[in-house]
Length: 327
Image (cartoon, rainbow, N blue to C red):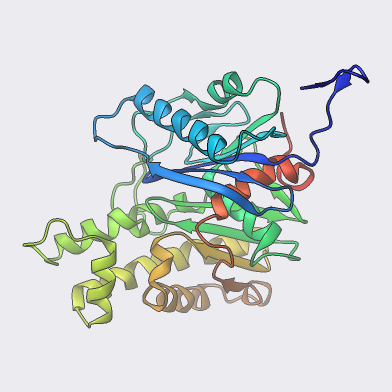
């Protein structure tokens, strides 16, 4: 878009951002105002069929972007921010989400840049996006040093030190889901064994509880039913969340000692079970984080709702001074 009278590109600094949040279960797209408010949004399942290939998933995402832009009145946007499940080649935005098997080395940033050739497109890990959102607008506001985690279909994380998002050499710094909690634990989708994610992610909770004998005649039962049974006193269900909280606590205690953070913010669908997970998690952190500087870290739940992924994705454009370091 060009200012013809001046002969130079029009100023888009007050324009909204198209924000994209891609996880193993759902994809969400929103138009986000410069102050961080989600103006219009919609979502769709990431996979409609188990055998969806890379192009089927991409076409679903492209269609969702078009639908949201139509609903917003086709605004001029100043950029496209994306949070996607990792790992990925960063900042190239070639993604290989552990929980989206059809996308291996998928050129997500390049595909979106073809759709939006006149604005920056920035792709980072979806958990990193949530961490940026909570640091910018949520539970980490005003905190200089923070670890954020998302416990959902996978377990991801991101790290803010000195008030800035830390990317690491490949953009995967803070990926606490692949800290090893139990070297003799279950196999992880990353190829390792005993990772926090292998024990605490939602599908792993259901798998472990079923192996222990939970609801053998109800194959459709999921984490929600598992939590309901745990609250009702079911022994296997309660042990499942104890085990998950322990694994998360071990990973968090290690990360606190390594990174010297003031706050840990934990969100994601599994975290919504509340005390079932947080009580064993906090107990484990207290057990292992015994040095004076590690004991000061506060564990908090998110302030933002399910829009956090989109708000964080938008922050890569809107607050690139803090949350983006490469183009």
